[in-house]
Length: 189
Ligand code: B4P
Image 1: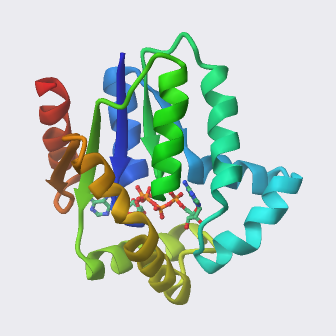
Image 2: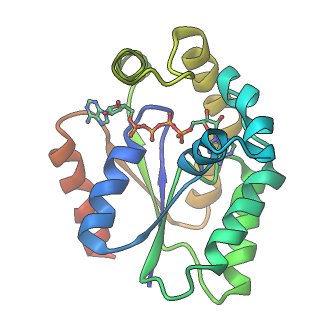
């Protein structure tokens, strides 16, 4: 079993690279962003609660996120492994995940970090906003998402670094080149 956390600031390409990792290694995808957007589209109570938080670029509460992860993990017991994309985003979520995996006799093997500078992130997300109309891809919200990342999410890197599990890669270049860097690490594990 192989369990990966794919980490990086908003727009660093986590969703993009997850698709390629899943295709090659057959892992089960956990994207908390996609899970929340599905709740929003279905207009569930959880989706309605999350909507205004996501539109401001803030983080949805750790309780809601951990509840979603717990439900999905328990329905995926036959999986070859998991890729966590955009989760954990706080140290409390990282601790919650370690605890949950330990209860199930599992652990995180590696955190792969996509390292991308601020201007490139803004350019990518503004382009996505133009092409796909995602409500949180406007300049004001993007700047807040980057701030929230710096303040609340970047400490999660230190959490995995202290366990000797963080491996960073340059996240700028062609999608295939970046995937090559990530697969090199996965295959060396
Ligand atoms: P997410 O859905 O996780 O979105 P993201 O961080 O913006 O995007 P990602 O890094 O996956 O970028 P992508 O591959 O799409 O989060 C959205 C919101 O949900 C959060 O702000 C928060 O409110 C909430 N949320 C989610 N998880 C949460 C949690 N655990 N706790 C609390 N709240 C949570 O790439 C972006 C763009 O770049 C794409 O258009 C792509 O085509 C392009 N791109 C990718 N790679 C490229 C490359 N190499 N070169 C050029 N462009 C590239």
